[in-house]
Image 1 (cartoon, helix red, strand yellow):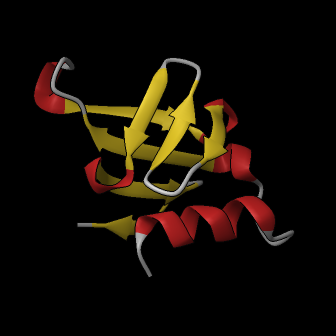
Image 2 (tube, helix red, strand yellow; image 1 turned 135 degrees about the vertical axis):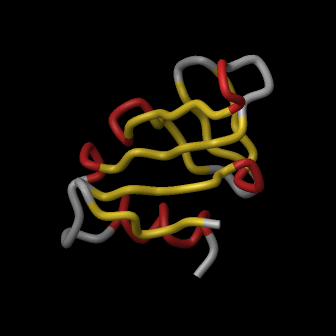
Length: 75
């Protein structure tokens, strides 16, 4: 399952609390090149990117997704 499909599943299925999701992504301006955002800060899941309060992040930049303490997606 790709990152977009997984995030959609976690957002729209009752089995998950999307606020417990943490998304790590490549961020050219961040120290170490990686930033993260919690599910509570995700406003929209679009076709090619997800939207946060700070902007749009393409799915291909996602390196890891955690649900609570568990890594559920990683490259």
